[in-house]
Image 1: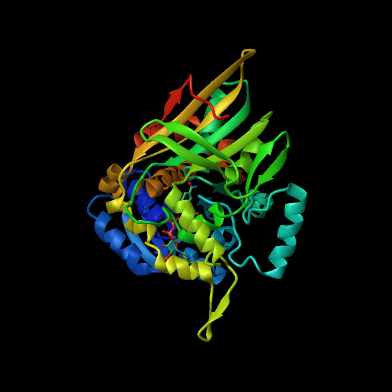
Image 2: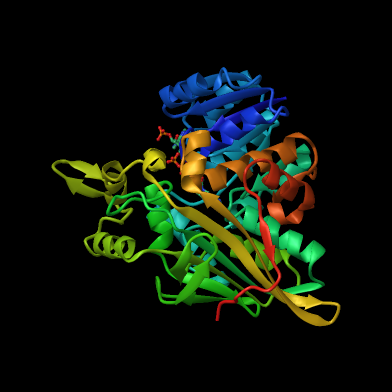
Length: 417
Ligand code: NDP
């Protein structure tokens, strides 16, 4: 069975390393905008795996380019680890070429000034009550098309969304009758030595972090100003960190898929240097997605900024320290209140030694491989469009331990106020 991976950045590098360790993947084609990156990765991996590896160029913004490639490659499944901008074109091409679809991030429009997109976006903001540029409605709308073709689209199999969503399904299956509160805590205690850099694609990262925050409470969204809600938490393996409430995509799917949940919040840690740089860049307009004229040509400020910032894929050798990502669940079991915390601690340098990438790419790339394995092996086999928490979490959790992301269940955790 053949896998087509689209994109060859930090997350793809880890996902492909991990596919090469798993005998399920016998034939992998790596296709991206810059083919030389795919060729360089094949050079590193070709003597370490029995999988047959090939590479190709593709423009994932173009349906025709994707279909031409997929007709040649004939993949069983496509793993999209390019950018969220390309989710819908890749899903369309999968339907056209009868391939299953897997990704790690939900659809986001690249041009947020496009009037047609804006009209739909503004209607959604009013109806749903949150203003993030990304949401699941676009991809969930493909449910019937994937069902009709007997294909599976698995959405959001990174760490968050992804592992945090599987942790939620696992907690519900094994520890609770009902989960009422979920706090997702994403801590990166790594230090790369630069005054400012992002750990994954700068454009996607900065758009997410500079936006309004929001959380789900009692059946509706509560929106906050960016970084308005701050807490401190003492993370195992990292220590005390400031963390801030953000909007995050798995809140939307967990609110739909975890029955009886009353509140879901997402917190991410940021250091003062990161926040100071980000605020300054935002204040001078460098995070804008609206094109401006500069010396006779049009440039998009955030894209120009991306060209100046360190490539996240280059942070691996410099980053030391650990990540700690997980969820605190509070609910009811056998009529009694119960709280547990499920988390993973991951060491940046260990990840780098194994795959050449730092822990943020590692913690996303490993679950990208696992979700793809669930679909390709038929372990998760349901035609339609689904989020990872809608399947049996046990086989996924087993693979997390086996492929480098072991998890801990703390049955007496410190909670977040
Ligand atoms: P990178 O920017 O490192 O890599 C993106 C890759 O996609 C690059 O190889 C790039 O090509 C390629 N690409 C971009 N546009 C196109 C296009 N039009 N056609 C073909 N290829 C294209 O990003 P990351 O690896 O950091 O992130 C990958 C994905 O993972 C993103 O969607 C991100 O949001 C998601 N993510 C999810 C997380 C989770 O926990 N769920 C956490 C972190 C990331 P080129 O090399 O030419 O630029």
